[in-house]
Amino acid sequence: MNKRNKKSKYSIGSLLLLLAFFFYFVFVKNGSLPDLESKPKTEKEAPLSQFTGKVVSVSDGDTFKVLYKGKKVKVRLLDIDCPETKQAFGSNAKDFANKLCYGKMVTVDPKGGKDQYGRVLGYIYVDDTINVNALLVKEGLAWRYKYSDNEEFKKLENQARIQYKGLWAQKNSIDPWEWRKLHNKK
Image 1 (cartoon, rainbow, N blue to C red):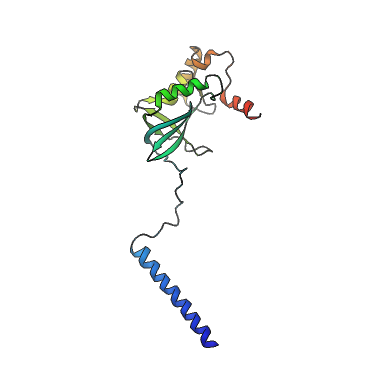
Image 2: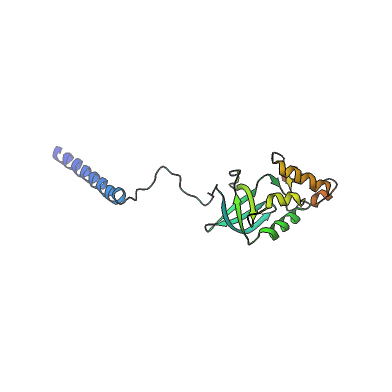
């Protein structure tokens, strides 16, 4: 019985040694050892440096899908908030953004990282010169986001208010963040 136990110990040990050599030659010698430290890439991952892609959809005035390296990247315009689609001027903002960007190559400058929904937060430029975020505010189709410290957008919003452009033609326009609070409770 002792011989049998010794024999099985050596055969398991030999098998483990053979497996170790196999993995060494297959993975290490060939330079194809998998990187166990890095996170696996998922479809939700998106570039956080400036990139160029084609706008393939406009969800609403401030949310786009940009095709980048064969994947759709959701982009949320930074520092602004357009009216919701069902809110007054919401469809105007979406139509304006659609006409300006849909099907075009744009540059996305992600300055804000990602939001809680995994969307890239940034600025979108058409023809490398037209800042879509700023233009929506200037045309009275978006608010400067209430927590933004972007002084340019603050000036553009004030000009649009003075000129009664877009949503500022209304007497009592409701901020989109307040509108969402009222309508998401139902």
